[in-house]
Image (cartoon, rainbow, N blue to C red; front, side):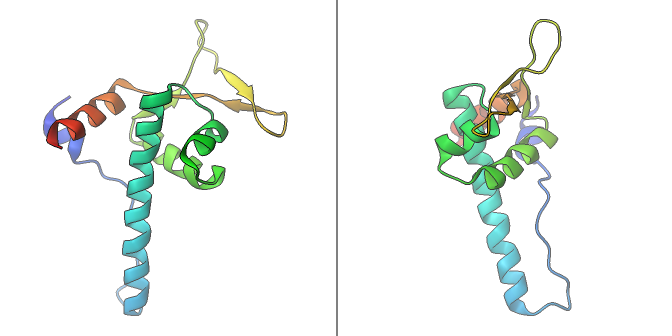
Length: 122
């Protein structure tokens, strides 16, 4: 992966209309910052702990499952996280707190490269 491709990801950003009050623009910027920080938190958590369900990811990060699940989905859409598959290509699942089965997610090589690149810049 090339350096520019790694660091210039096009994450979707919360938006405010031009006609919205200044407070809406400030709120959109705040949400964008927190979403970005939570995406990085999700990636670093996968890197540290390995494959996780969204529930396990929430427990490791201290965030609500529905909140960190959205950031994991952003990472998935960017190609940095993918479903963990068994040897037959089936999705691996683990029990969720409700007793149902939850998909297990893992970092991709692109996700690992992204984190390495960020660490190299630090």
